[in-house]
Length: 479
Image 1 (cartoon, rainbow, N blue to C red):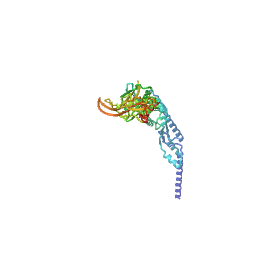
Image 2: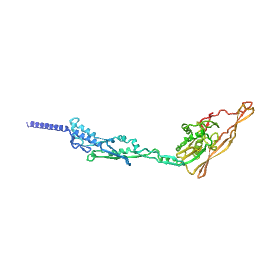
Image 3: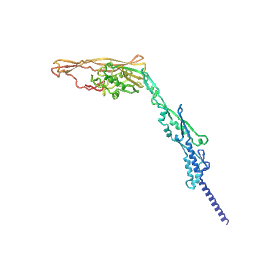
């Protein structure tokens, strides 16, 4: 009997305990409040109703985003920029906390019991910063308006042939990498800034860097264009308007050219540029050793003048040939002809520094100047001497209008020459070397004689067809 009674008491006790426990569990997991001591970024929300706590939290997050931010520039007279953190691209969220709150009422009663029992008490807010929002406010156009544009350094040659430099102008630009670091450190990570009674505010000096233009005075001086190293000129004499125009056009294409160390001056490219920009006019050209009407006559005076400047500076002559006829503006052996597609003039800048070439027609003189780096105690002289004179040959052509046996000199003819040219190097005014740089032949011009013989085939030693090479111009003859 006692055993039965004891069993009933035990069963009743178990049922009572179970009922009480079940009721407690039901009440515990059914709470509409947050567990005690819960706080988000130092803001206490424990014991508050869930909906109320979330609303309070959202309000706090919005309040954080409305904190004023002053962006300043360390420059006199530069206005500050005032904006809220949200306008600067800053946002705050507590998504992890909100997801945890939602789980308090999700899943089985056992899941809810376990989750509420183990609910974390300390939570953080997470700030985010979208830098693109700020970049949309401080655009490159904004930077140009407020800071200006960089200006490259310049180099100019004065009327006295002095090399003068104007320094570059650098300008400020926003250093976005540094700004990212500073903003990340500045953005608050909790609610402490808005916890007190004072109105919160943040300030930051926009970090700047100096934008330097691509061309600086250091870049220009490094090129080594220090001074005028040579000037050479040739006269235009009695050249007609067409020839003067052609010389000027080719000179313009040369003027201002800068040869870097190792670069090769290519006269064919000069002529192509001059023809495209300015065109050439009619003026006498050389065709197979004879002066004939043509287009572009005179262009070789530019190549010859540049050649003399180059050879008197010790530059490496890559390609050069003399005219078939002597020219009036230079001694024999010191000219450089050009024939499109056949003969070119080229030299290499072997000074080790950049070389600036100026060329211009002034007072019926073609003046060429080189500016660069060159030892002041070194100079070059050029000497040419005729080693052989080639006799005038005779050519006969039939003229039946003459009396039989009669003759008429149509062209008197001129002798030819073989010329050797030497380059003499001097150091401190003393000759240290002498070398032959060219061995040139100027063909003789035949004496042309008209005759009338009984046999029209006799005495006619007119040469056959020759290759049509136009020198000192582009085309001809123009009859």
